[in-house]
Amino acid sequence: LNGEQAIATDGIRVHYTPDLRPKTIVNSPLIQVGFGPPDMVVEPNKKRSFITRTCTVESRCQDQTDDTMNIIGSAILSNPDLTCASGAAMMLCSFSDLFQLACPASCGLCEEGTPRSPDEYDAFSVFYHAHLLGKEMYTTLIPQDDPGARIDLRSRDVWTYEDQTPYPLEGVVIRPGDKIQTTCVFDSTDRSESTRFDLATYDEMCLNTVGIIMDTPDMEGGDTTAANEIYLRGFRCSTGEEGDIWLGEFGLDEDPRLVIDSHPLKDAQCSFPTGLWIYDGVPSMQKRCDGEIVKTDDGICDQTPGPSFLNPTAVAGHTCQGGLFGDKDSNDGTTELQCTSGGGEWIEYDCGEAQQYLLQASVNGLALEEKQFILEYWWAPKCCVGLGVDDKDVDGDGASSSTDSDDSSSASILSHGSALLLAGMLMMNLVAF
Image (tube, rainbow, N blue to C red; front, side, top):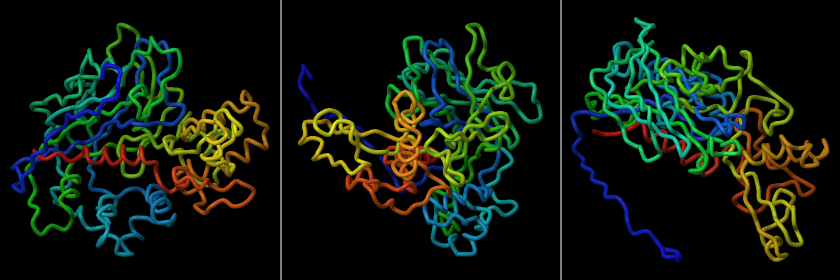
């Protein structure tokens, strides 16, 4: 303030009551790009670049796939063979609310006639979120029984970063099997470099949801928690190939409501699968081209022996810039004290930045052997989440993780920023009314 540092004294006031309201809203995410793989970017100098996804509506009251549970088991329980069936046999349904959420059918929560699998959902609102480049937002309902119809759900031909409000819907009924197309449009004409999807305001996001309103369920003596009960009564989107995210660019006169017709997924050169753990609409950090998941030798997680994906916001290390220890790294055993005592600056970098460094290995003068060593011993254990990552510490020759606590997180733990974002995404799904 007036050229000096100041502490904000504003805030919010929260009112709460133990008396449940007669109606409850649960948010069903359509697309949740709060961070993405390195190739998912807003290209510079584009007037109407877009990111879009087709949500095929289905009940949340069904188990996650075995592949998803394998990854969850590997990351959380060090059990890469975990499935809903095996977890239920281990009595996880009895003491893990998260397991119930991931495997409701195996936990006996989805029996025939349960209100957790309704025949229709009453839409209450639609919500859009992007950052500074976001300029237009679109959501269109395509009923299963009338696939030629395009029912607009409060799309915004003009949208700004300050426009963070739910838009009410009236008389909109959504049914399993319906499709909902949702699209964020960006204007990057004032950017000279690509903009990645990440947490900073100068980065981008695309988080679009539909709010569903229902009678508040009876919470007394239930077979699951109140939060799970409410969550399971919403809908989710299919994470099959038809649920991939794809990017493109509109002409100046094109209507983004018709993107599924004018720029269909089948015409996209590559797309990005969704379904990160139980989070709907979140990129899985993979890329699909010509129907196949693309693996290269360049990315940090591309040479792991099993399925894994990059967590771009995890801390990959610290580098020393300048001074006696210039260009040294926490992963080679250099410490912050050594760096700063030698006149350098200790700079944190994340896995997304490490990935970009590796992709430009030839430009950065890295020999093949150096690149392989850095990939395998420095960054893969910290940046890759999934079955292909060995959780044990790396030993020997200065390649072990730094004693800096910020760098010591294993691959089985999401970075603080990503964990907060994912937790926020899940909490956004529960709103009492």
